[in-house]
Image (cartoon, rainbow, N blue to C red; front, side):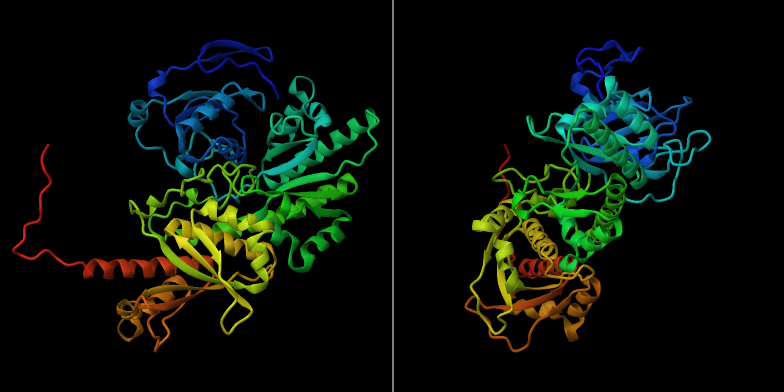
Length: 536
């Protein structure tokens, strides 16, 4: 899809597909912030498409409908960062959506304040005129299913045919399937394949995908291209283990039900910054289309399951910034190619969001199946190095020891958010590598050491505290009796459960310890005066 739009710094008029558009910035550069107003949105545009379109350019913190008398819809959008808003401005202003040219402008702070509260509805979308089901004109709407875009790879030589003359072909596909389609032509310059992202409902994604396969087959016939053109779906590695299933059962069933052959790219092809695997489907177009539906159904189920667990538990961990954790890529949740939330080298991912300026380092011993050690370490130690760098934590596998040869101890040292990241990835890795069944939750045992004098506070009078802790977190928490304190006068607290249960229990125990430490601090005696800071 191509259109001639002036750069953001040159307001004026431009001709686009025979129509004269006004492109202007009414906000001085110094007043531009994270807030945008998007006008001329198609009145029948699907909610899912709008959500997916906005999410491409960054994290949307708020989206509010503006009441207008126009047939088309208007929304105010606030992104998490200025550069995200700027990117959205550059990409969306003047772009065509179902024969409507979008108009995007900045909202200065004072104008946003004068608007008052939004009219209500979903994330601030208010009712405007007669409601149109499934469109931005609808006020409060029923909860939508979670939308995950479909990402596919296509041979570079077919990209021109998919776009069509003056973008007509791709425009027709988006109109017929009610989807937003991005062809990432600039990615992987010179590569034999290009990624395409389709934002729509599951049905819209499947319909657009089938049409694209048909276009490629027709182009291949006309250009005497004799090689088979498989369907290549990109999926985040977090979900591939569950797609495959124990001993490959899920994948085999999809192959049998759809009459296709499905292969998945190797884990060795992954990097921390490109966490997608390629799912290659071969067979007749109609069979590949059915396989795509089944594959994406599994991917969506996995994503929804993970998000439900996060939403249930994350609010119980005070101040935890889930967006900073990099559990899913940015842009399209759980599916995108980039890991923009990964902290740069040397950064430790915003540990201050726990409400502490410089949170203390903690050490946790996590026990994993001994057979999983190779997968955690990775080829030549690459996986554990990447994980350590990503999480901002020290991660070491202890030598085999103890009574249970089936388990190995992983020693994780770092502040709270680093612990969350590292442990989350370890739990996820065990699931991906099928050390637990497809319907089986990953449950591990973690040990943390506490001062022997504080163990009683963790247990509570008559076991009250530890019982409350177990009820709140759904983890099993045990302080073994008759422990002999180690050389540092510390004893072990054992925590068993799924990831969020373990995390929550660890955080609650650390809160108890912090309380004990504060009470242990000597108070200034009455004869001494606390020094006052000097006035400048």
